[in-house]
Image (cartoon, rainbow, N blue to C red; front, side):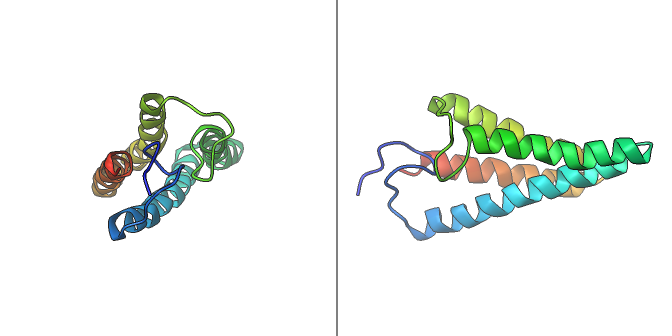
Length: 125
């Protein structure tokens, strides 16, 4: 099989690398939601702001992901370059959230895994 378009959608030829990266990417997506939730509940000064940030930030990230980046086929297709940039931005917010809460080492490890995962995802043809 030949892949017409790099990334998660299309007629992908599964190899151990692409299958492992798909698992890593899914784990990073879940970790992004958890990190944004953690950041929101740690950042807010009142219960209302903690709830708003702790629930709202992951909900916003999930909405953007579902509209533009979903692996099963997003609602709105973007050019590949824009898709890569948006994916790095959305996943990168979790690294920034971890850094902002004092989890520097975790933020660096998460950011490095994001960079590797996105690079593998869009370079495998």
